[in-house]
Image (tube, rainbow, N blue to C red; front, top):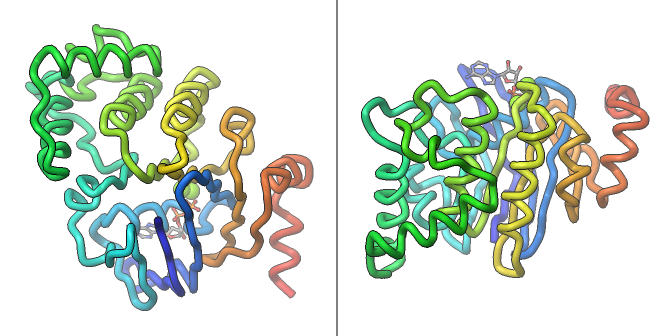
Length: 250
Ligand code: ADP
Ligand code: MG
Ligand code: MG
């Protein structure tokens, strides 16, 4: 589904990613962990197609096609969900309108018919239950005045509505509370199917109490220095990151 080969990326002339290799197959959940400043968010940003990140070597293919050639919008329409791709705030546009437009644009790209108002509402109700979303949020302007937890809920709700093939969630170090973690986990777990995959970028082991990854990768100084099963997350919780640092300083 996603194949990253020998990826090098720089920000403002500073090399951050230094030869990333990663293969994600349908049905898999991958966690990317690592100390602060390792390049986790940079990797997520490169996948999202954010500006400011220069790819200096390597390649990324998504569903067999070159990803790096594509705009962030096209990446999304082809089934990549990137947690921070969506506008932070859109004054004057209610969530429900924004979502209807997004869902229908994605359907159009796939050659599907637009949803009728009734069909859209049915889909929305179904997905709202999933993340325990309230109508008071969907009727509000996109992210306007949302709290951190509400924004997170909203983001996962958008993901559930768009039913992406590959979801990439960067759980920034902003200290999500336990409710927000559960929302993220429910969203990722509900998306799970033999045809879909997820990459969960996290600094904390805690999230992985709710999302059981098939693989855990440790990113350190721009490289994946260790890959193992879910037990690696538990090992990190117990031992911290110091052993990774000392093992890789030699
Ligand atoms: P992580 O998510 O693992 O904490 P980041 O990818 O955010 O790590 O950061 C990796 C390194 O890249 C850090 O040294 C950070 O300061 C630098 N960096 C990331 N994004 C930018 C940017 N937009 N401008 C300048 N430096 C950046
Ligand atoms: Mg960080
Ligand atoms: Mg980060």
